[in-house]
Image (cartoon, rainbow, N blue to C red; front, side, top):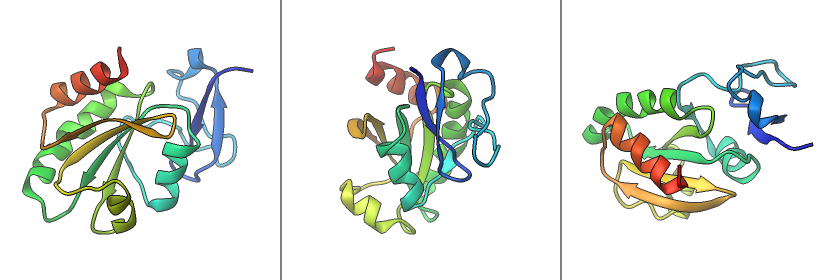
Length: 145
């Protein structure tokens, strides 16, 4: 049976969803939460590892911190980009102050930094704040779409 492995943002359970049904508001088979909300997922270490390592959807991650002015300015654009890119791409936010191990693992030296993952690997990286259309265009170009 083919399809995408979509990680539930609420409970972290993997869900197999046929590709043609991604846009039909699928729900988690375990906790029944919506798999997509049109908003970025706040990812702790466990959820980040599941999203990037076990899910089959590309994952666009915003590495940010609460004290960062450009991060705060970009947050609404990143949220709007989620509405454009889901359900083909999962968007997640990682607070580099709370998740220092993840930030260290990926060598985050400046924030905001966007990293696009596919198949558990980093495929593109972009430091600096961007607007909604720039984020969407950059992600689609990196994915060849």
